[in-house]
Image 1 (cartoon, rainbow, N blue to C red):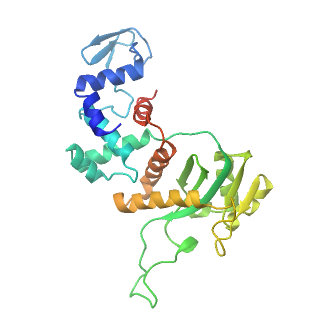
Image 2: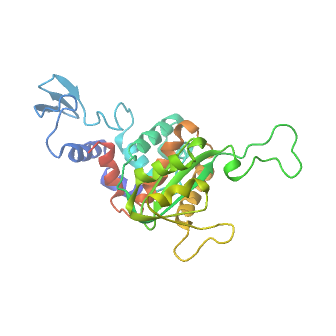
Image 3: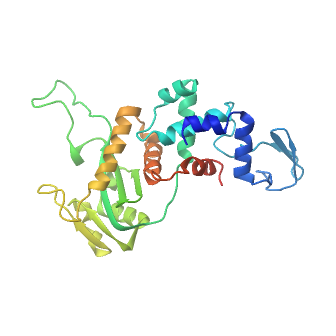
Length: 289
């Protein structure tokens, strides 16, 4: 749903409230504190006759304790979901006419609603790792041949591991550099891949050496070729390209503390790229439905 459709469908605050009440309660208001349905309504607030508490439909949702109109929240959701490479807090602030800190806060709450534990990946699954962060200059004067840190696995950047079901969903998360070893990679595979109904495609990194002991595993040697029939990692490489272009081109700089939430955002949009009801699904997730 784009911003034109948001304005057409939810022109007033009352329309927004009515919509989330319908999605969350389906006509039967329930107290979010004691879960009783002995509730009486008073304009946009409700009163629970069981625990004697006053509440609104936004309690325990991403809209809780907000002083912004819900229409701006709906517009923010639309902008974030439709931005393939993400949208920065400053751009969101300009579009919604709020300050930068408010826009950042809204963006982070929306990302919290995007976290999901999907089904295990099946079929042909590609797995790879990448590195996120700026190129750090070495101390002192530029050495001969350049002033950047080592590329590849010798870098000081943050490692991110991911797996993608070819033609389907992707999962990814940042990890400590010490987790790029066989035991940790095997744990990630078992958590996210159906090892009995999948074939894993990777490069020849030594951390994947023992994968063949518990599932079918094929490798591609990037020193000589990038595709050998159906053996390649081009799908996960394409996702890495999308992620990096978004982080560098839109966000410019992301803290280590919040990196996992930004990666969650990119995975969520990628996994639901063909979902025409993505806005409605995200609203339901934001309301805890």
